[in-house]
Image (cartoon, rainbow, N blue to C red; front, side, top):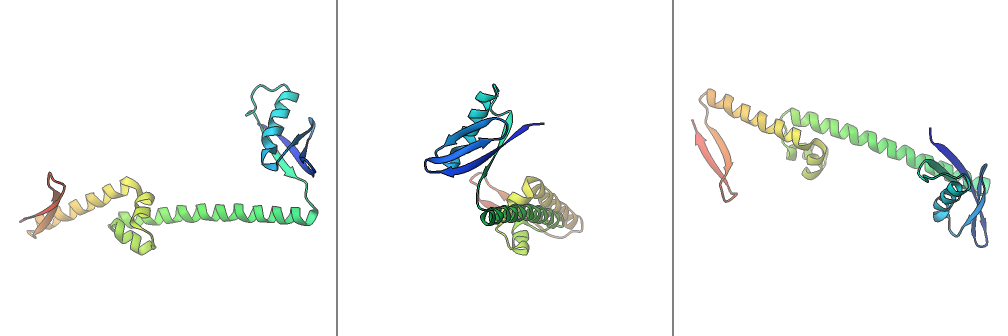
Length: 166
């Protein structure tokens, strides 16, 4: 378990006073530097060689109403990030299922309201291979029934050419 040092940052005329529970007090010119300054101070005061072996939690001292608003805003952002991750996972799952059902990447994009590039990112190469395999199977099935099959291949110059077989 990693040690966590709580640092209470108090505003003063020259920056921030950092009160580190169980360690001592130091100062930082800006709040953005407070965690680094506190980490260095803790490592020196506690004779710790590896500054990455512990965590620092900087808590700015604010009036109660403002502190409550900060906590609420942070909680809402965390919740929104979690919901976004869940929605992306669901979108990925649905895109893969649509790919397995035989839809092309462009068709999946149209169904989900995404760009084909985003669909490609969601389903990855494995789904494209499934689509190629399904089209190949459909072509073989059609050919075995005596139906005409149009095969598209790339020539050496990279242009698509068509050939018909019976």
